[in-house]
Image (cartoon, rainbow, N blue to C red; front, side):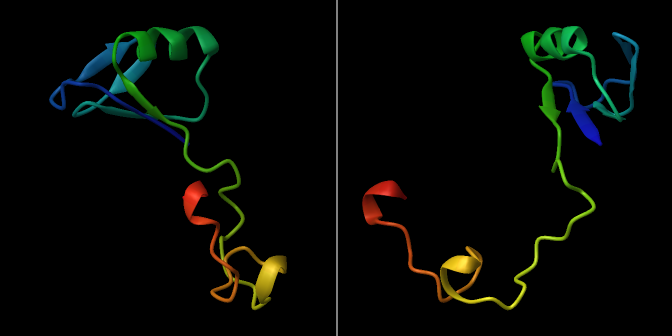
Length: 80
């Protein structure tokens, strides 16, 4: 799901075929032309996670096999 937010949080209306309520719209897809227009006009576009069906969980593995493991070494300080 794609969430589009306007600068005006009170905007209710249709822009480029997209219905907004209280400055926000949710759509399944957005054409490149409409996306470019909205970004150019100052709208914020949040495409969310690409794999909404997969859960981000620690699967119990430790170390380098699982980057979310608490036992994984921290990255070097210069790369944080």
